[in-house]
Length: 378
Ligand SMILES: Cc1cc2nc3c(=O)[nH]c(=O)nc-3n(C[C@H](O)[C@H](O)[C@H](O)COP(=O)(O)O)c2cc1C
Image (tube, rainbow, N blue to C red):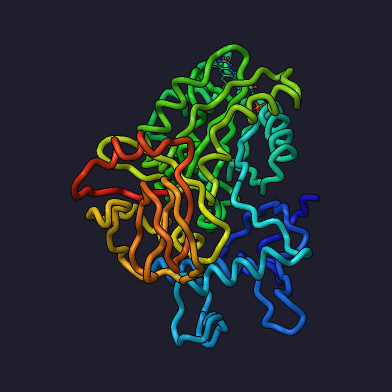
């Protein structure tokens, strides 16, 4: 169940430490403080965010001095600790859902709000309602009147109506659904205020709108041109009579789950993109975390007539065991080398994953005989 949390009053969720204004956010979590184990340190989802921010050298507003984040006892905080922490937090049955999706919307007469609420139910996302500092009165939106406030604002692309309840940060969210009514074929200017207030360069943004009849396309173009967005997915216009089933049917078509998946590795080689499914081990998780900092390019050479091998920019935790490889296996060798196997070999090393749906012949043709450069991404 979603629970309304006043940011100023919240003492449990450390998100409050990042928020300084009176904005309110509904979280899907009943409680974020979880105990990783009754014997061990208690870690919260916020600890995971803190450590991730520290590793990515992002500003973390909480003082991390003295935090017990060296989980593997090697006197430093790195992706290995992050993997162990995430695992501890997530395996606890009482763990609150670590929500990375936010539904944000502005709605003056309730139509967009209804769609947003269906979406919140479907996604179990957190939500946030944009409210105007000077609320729009009925006269303000009487579009038959040329001089009404809404018409004047829509006629001037530079207007930025103030938001009454800005949230201080959207950093912890990866995916943002952004809802609004269409006003004169476009997004209301207060949506522009919102977009210009935050950094969306690493976010997936999905616009949705309601209107009497106009489409969403112009507003989508405006949004794209206004601010850098990591990944803007195609949006959707709904009529005021749209049902929850309509919203669910749209949601199911979105290429979200695949993109958010933490168990996929993309390997770009010689103009071909391969997808591997990663193993469920700390090595693969550490690679996934590393890739969140950016793509990795690896120069690989051919070795032993069975593999391409190259150096990773940093070591990953090992989970070595005796393995006989099959074509398509992605292997971690000595903790700091990644290999793509196109033939059999038996050795003690760590399986990171396996390339999907490819034959040995196809793989050999893509990899070629000599040195190659591959790009790894999430
Ligand atoms: C100022 C104003 C301009 C509007 N312009 C359009 C328009 O260009 N095209 C359209 O189809 N509907 C237009 N509408 C209708 C709204 O888009 C529609 O009623 C919407 O569902 C309202 O959403 P809300 O209830 O979330 O505020 C306009 C409404 C207002 C108030």
